[in-house]
Length: 190
Image 1 (cartoon, rainbow, N blue to C red):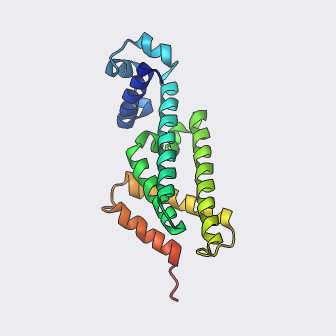
Image 2 (cartoon, one colour):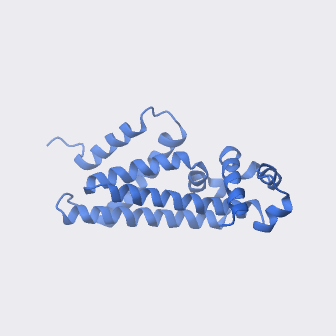
Image 3 (cartoon, rainbow, N blue to C red):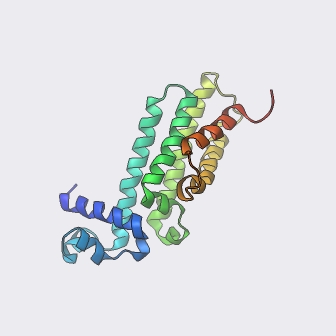
């Protein structure tokens, strides 16, 4: 990627994370990137175009980190735990990406809606592979792997706000591990 374009994206990523797309202007991005607005417009037509590129960049980071975490884990249980922990950790760090997946204001941007749909598909496919591996190894007993992958995806989405935005959780890893224990072992007395 062109060094100037990368510089614009890095600056914009920080500004969007701090102020959001609504309050960010092309002038601010150009000023902090130490270039004229005309240079900025050479690379991007609008701040929405810059935001879309930032979202794509952050999406690739999240997906890569998730795949790395899952590939390092050995058992299906460890893979699911690694997936959930990594997902929450990087969503917290990549606030633009997280905002794009959750902010209702951004729904009218087609690139955001497309990214939301693609990421949900990515999650369900990734989790389904892990669950299928667990079933084939005799570790999991699952009636419908696809539905289970979907339910885990929805459960993670439900955990996002309290774990990422609200900051009311002191030890995110501990709480996620407790949730995973319920998932793996259930709450019924055996």
